Length: 488
Image: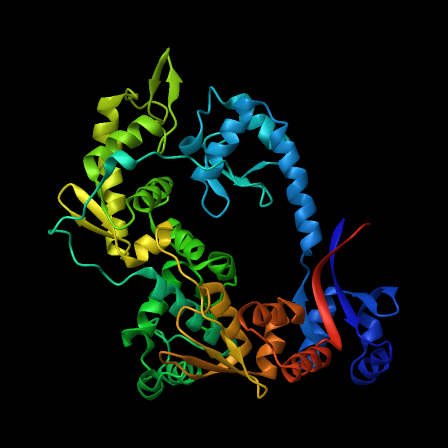
């Protein structure tokens, strides 16, 4: 198999149009059919700059059927594994972040050696080059089914709220929506950083215009804006924006789409896992379960710690077996510490309290001495509170009207990628744009945009569907697809 770039046209007549503009034949390696040709790397270097605005560039991706087939195949493989191997794999999945796990944090590199070798041989784990074998980083197969959920029974820790709980801090749900809005704006604009690392004022003004923020549009200082500056720092904390070292042009990592996908609660959970320290994020599901079971009440911290030690002793560290006794993971040459109740009190308890402090700063938890409770965002994240979503309205003049709580974070990201914001208030208004849809088509199909609108809107006007299809047809007359796999 080899990865190639394929130039495809919607109508074979387009080949003559292209050849009249550029010397296409010199850069074609082979013809696949009447509408598709494999092009050499020289096409990107020499011809693509001459065809700007006429060629839509995409990267190859699997369709839904291929993804489902791969996931079902892997689910069968995992089900057929030995129980001991399944245990190691599930532990690795729970400790993994962005599908990367550090071996010493998830398994015993001596006792679980055979399991790791078997999982590696089956392609379920892939060692990261340059790391220590069995203790360093491993990449998980992206199509693995999720591990079984750890079931927590924390009802004994539930209590009424106390009067000394600290006030709620701003939560992550509004931040996530602003992250999505700002990211969508950055996708449509060319933004540069100054030598000081801040967004150029002129570019900040254009970002403000795109976001329908009069204050930012007039001032232009993105980092200093209370709302959009927070969103910018959030994108930076997630490592979802970067810049070219020479031109200092800001680019957006569309891996953000994976963080935002699913329900708002799912997106919040991914955000929390990313912002909590890597070696502590396995504690997040336990806190989420405690808040869910507490509902409108609070959680007794001491009882929570006792129940966690009983029900999920290895929530942070797997027990290593050395000389017939259980010990904490350690580096070669270090003194091993006993993996016992005293160890949990000395090692895990401070780490758990650190996670609770982090969640309090993120606006998900309120704390008092010996007690914690969910904020409004925290209870929503935990699943204790949920409600129906109001509908979105799409008018025949391509305007999209979005009431509060009508969209998930992922849906907001997509809607703002598809159109320009006209008003950002209690009710937001957008207008679908041809140029925005063309940008969208570099990573999606027009049918996905229509599915999004139909899912949230009681009725999408026929004129809107016809306009989107017409724009897509024009944008897809000539498409360059990179990363297509062909058999040699």
